[in-house]
Length: 467
Image (tube, rainbow, N blue to C red):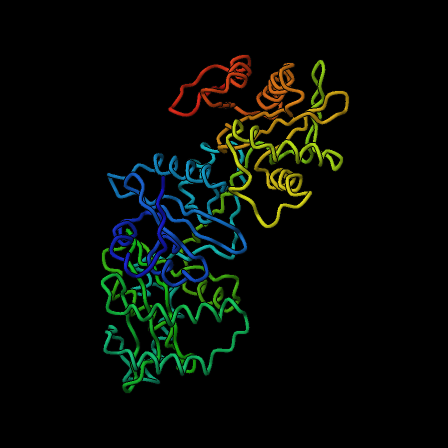
């Protein structure tokens, strides 16, 4: 089981072990972004089979994983993905991925039969040849060279140099001056400046490459980046815009100082900011790095309503308002729940209202976590069959429980068998699982009539059916 811990500065050396060798090149696969945006994304990490696994918690999008980062020659990505699947199954979380490198897309599509892939232009990273930004050589960079020449002419005493922790007060002065000219009203842009100011406090740490442009003892531009694989990922590029030409001077100077031996420079996305997009395009990116959002779905995703299934004696369909009294009696039956292997008290949310169990079943179906079939005999509710615990790879579990006064007539086995056939041959599952306690002879008999044995442990007997 994955053991997640919140990301903080104390884990920087461990995280950099993975990020320093990461081949994905996208800015999200870096320590700087995780530290800078941790209040927003609340990232956690775990290690699995030589891979770094990151789980982000988004208020808007829910729980989102990064793609596992393997240590070269050591990491087993497939095993790490298996661990993610197990963790999600045990915690009732959909295994969805927020930022997937384009090179890993096919692996996820092959792994999960039902997926939705998005590639939002607003979040694509800008990639430049390291040599190109270091030299601005060639006719196509004549505009940048002209800006730098003008900057030298206007400010002949300006110099580029590395930052050190001793520059703390000078950097704070820069931020005060920057806020005086910062005029963006966008909330995210304001938040980014706040986070940038905080991450600059990492100046002096081994992973943080920092630099500044200084004029007459005053800092007028700052930058911070880190090396991830063959890429210099630039997290911060800020300057006082009243100093004409300071940005291209900083970009070239910083690239020349820190990209030796590297192939790419990633100057991150523009988040849809018109000014940033214009500026980043003027530096002639070699390509825009796609950030694929992969939302994993299950077989229920194409189901709008609970279907009606028929057997010789029974009808299986959706729960109704008029089932409330009988359904509550079934859900509150401690003896039945003991064999069911679930106690509603463990997950009780709020007060136990008259509609609590009906609403929970409807919410599970709405969120595609489960489908609850009411079992009806001559129109009367007598129990339920539940298809749940989807593994997002073609498997799910099927359970059944009957009101005590209708037990012993084979209704459970009849309903279970029909739901199993529908799950495999209509819904499209590859594998159906069931289980019962060793001492539950009735359930054991029912499962043996529908499935094949699939092992046991100290508590349960396991069964399965595959197609």
